[in-house]
Picture 1 (cartoon, one colour):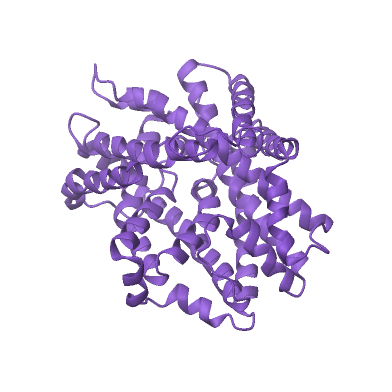
Picture 2: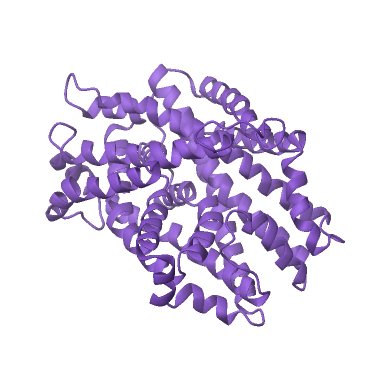
Length: 450
């Protein structure tokens, strides 16, 4: 059966950008900026996106497009006879599955908060009661399971309609809605009274502030954030690449994806930092920023219920675009590797994700005392495995596979990445890809582990 391609280049770019754009752009990025010195962190982040993110993205897409398969069969088709690179495919499948064990739970939180603003549950809630709303959410396993189940069901429902009529069509709608909402929310925050200090913190570099944070912390944090923001290393981008046409070079497409991803991250900063400044809120408060700090800000805004509803609708779009893309990677993996029909793969993966999401939900209430890796709870342990181990390790595998002769090789990678019209990858960069890029990726891996 011929592999279904995306209907248009725009569709591919929006789906791939949707895979990259997620909760990390809006949740993790702003508090990382807040904790790491402001604008100087942003400059390092942008630099690492260019020297690490774009090259690794081209490599993962190249393996997918050249083979027309997901990771296991894709590498098996491209590797030399007798080599075992393709076994990494099962690691990628595990990484996607573990990611969805907790990502769907957080997506469910977004759905819950959107519903609360839609029906007016925050009306009459005092400033000091906002944290309790979040605690009540975590303490309600039934409610969380319902919200998580809705996310999982709708995600796989989209995939039943295929690539063009399902994933591509829905992602286009969500991404256009996401981009429109983020501009409206950012303009609203910028126009708030006393927002200027937050804008300066975010956009004007301050070496003294970076020194207080520690330059090593700023640089390593920016490297990690840039690395993780594009969802590299666990085969999701390769799966999307396997459905690409050959009309455009991969360097140009990768740059467009990274620009969209970066745009959302920067606009998220322009939503959060001016609002924090306007209402004298500390921006570096960590993960609680969205669920405890922002609702307080919305309470002080004129039309706060509307702005809160729009913000969490935007968060649903951001998270759901990632969910559907990673679900497609899971479905494609079982279809390719086991020869299953698409509907059977969707059903099996639906049951798998639904069941394996339960421990994360229970980890906040009935199983809150469970510690798996160090002092991490269930969600923290799942995130550690994916973010600190599988993403950098998987990216290292793609880099070595695409640039060394005992893998696929630099010549074949260059031929694939430069096929089509658009920006071409220079062969002068190959020494950097072979020696420096693996070292930088290894730094991210070591930093994450220790």
